[in-house]
Length: 249
Picture 1 (cartoon, rainbow, N blue to C red):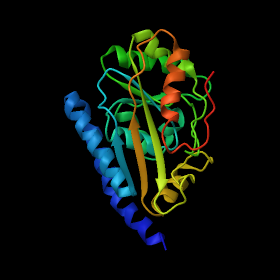
Picture 2: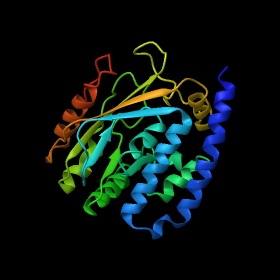
Picture 3: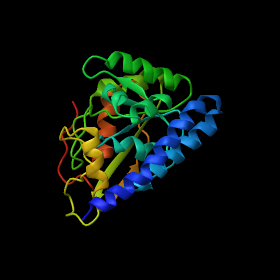
Picture 4: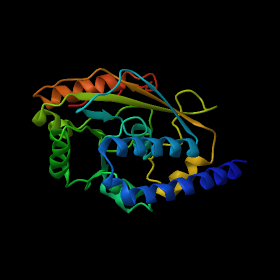
């Protein structure tokens, strides 16, 4: 019964994707403020077309900060980017995704190679923070099913230590409308499904709500373990996470 809905959403998404590709051809020539507004608007429209409805709670974010969030899906970038046009740190695999990878690169996404690019990633994030901009990363280092917060990798927060930037914890809680409370959302990317398969799963079902909660900043501090623990504790307090999360080292 959801196939017609999925096809309609796909038809709505295609012109938005093409518009994004056209925008990327000249966006580098625009002012930073205008770039940010265009990119945020594009993310919001894509979420609407896909059937994802985001609600944001908590204090406004001002930069430069290092935003850290739990990682559930590739949709996290759209959800966060719709509100905060920060530089994202993403896995190198994203660059190879059809059209989406190219768009991500054009708007300044920072790519990291799994298992071997941590030092380079830290250098890139620190450079962004020193420029007076803000960056977003996912310190779990992988996606989960969205019902818990996995262990954080404190090393990824070293960029905040080196630049004196505060850490802004943000929690993403996804829930499919009509689903049992606490059940994993179909938006999850934790089951190794391919990008296209995951996209089809998202658009071929009821609306997906995401409750985005911004918590008070942590730091600045010169102890990445402390930053990691406090950010993990804040994000784990989101009502979506019913099971006790594993604490970071």
